[in-house]
Structures are given as C-alpha cells and as structure tokens.
Amino acid sequence: MLLKTVWRMLKICLWVMRMIRAIIFDFGGVCFYPGNTNQIIKEALFNSNFPKMKILLLLLDFRKRKLIKEAVKEFNSGLIDDKSFWKKIKKITKYDFDEREIKENIISLNKPINRVMHIIKRLKKKYKVGLLTNNNSWLDEINQRYNFYQYFDVVVNSFDVKISKPSEKIYKITLKRLSVKPDEVVFIDDKKENVVAAIRVGMKAIHYKNPEKLIKELRSFGVEV
Image (cartoon, rainbow, N blue to C red; front, side, top):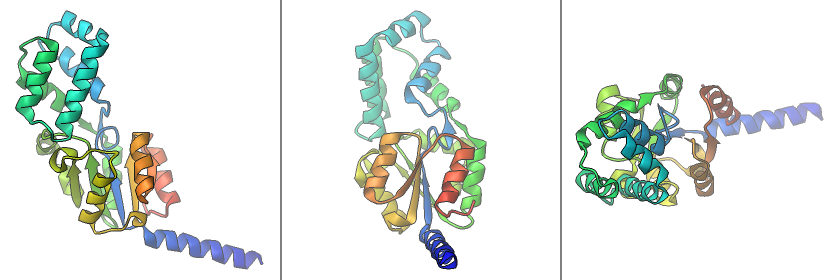
C-alpha cells in the first residue's frame, strides 16, 4: 500500500515537471529594482534640480499625486506618448522642469536584481522564458544599458500592446507568443493582483518576495533551478 502511494506521488511529480514549459517574469520589483513607481518618481525628483519645496508640497497633495499616477498608467498603457506624458506632468506640477534630466534619473534608478537574473539565465537553458511588464517606451533604453532582453524568448510590454496587467488579454498575448498553454506556465510578479489574474487565466503563479523564496517555490512546481 505504501509503495503504491509513493509511486502515485512520484508519477504526479513527474507529470508536473513535464507540464512546465515556460516561466514568465515581471520586470520592476522582480528582475529590476525598485519596483514601486511612486518611489522611483520621488527619488528621481529629489535627484534633480526640481525645487525641493515643490517636491514636498507635491508629495503632500493627494489630488496631484493621484493625477501623476493616472498619467503614468496612461503612459504605460500606450495611451499617450512620451511628449504627451511630460506635458501632463508639467501641467499637474505647474513647473517647467527639464524632462530629460528627470527621465535620465528614472532610467538610472533601475538596477538589475543580480540573483534573479542569474536564476533566469539558468532557467533559459531548459525552459522558455518570458518578460511581461507594465512599462513604457523607456524599457528599451534600460535594455540598451543592461542588454537583458537576450535572456528572454519573449518580451511583452504594456506600452506596445496597449493593455496592462491585470487584464487577462495581456497574459493571453504572452502565452500565444511563447506558444504555450496556461497550465504549462509559472508566472512571477511582486503585485498580488497580477498573480491572482494569472491564476484566473489558468497559470501557476508565484507572489515574488525574494530570490531565495523564489527558488523554493519554483521547485515546488517541479521547475529545475
């Protein structure tokens, strides 16, 4: 009886291992840090010539913060271009700042999480690896600095497809480009709502916390890492 149970469990484990064909990663907060958009904008402003008092007043103004967040969401969804985005931000802040300086600061703040990138390199030897991110046209410029696209078979940016997570459509686009079924995929994101959406589509999913926990959770799905 015990041997039958062990054999059944072994077959289940082998079946799960055969099932996983692809791993899809989020960008900010998983592959690169920082992941919090508000934190990036705040740091970028403080590192610029933007008047510090204006920054403090802006941070205290809930309405303006909300408007900035909405503008970022529109930009990341590809609903507005770079020029329109800065026009909106200047209108909200009522300050004619040098957008090139702020943009450079934002791009420079993005740094790879080396331990996760190392995991991705190892996974790519045995699995298809995708990147699914709510981002904008600046992602290509970050790639020019770090050349991380080479580690992914597919890169799906919300700016390009005009849809953002947690919309089910963007997950399905990624699956189609990877030529895999939902139950053959493990999806990784640091935002719970995006993880829940992936599960709803039929994927296995991990709510990312840190590289060590990520390895354990990947292995629990039968992923060799």
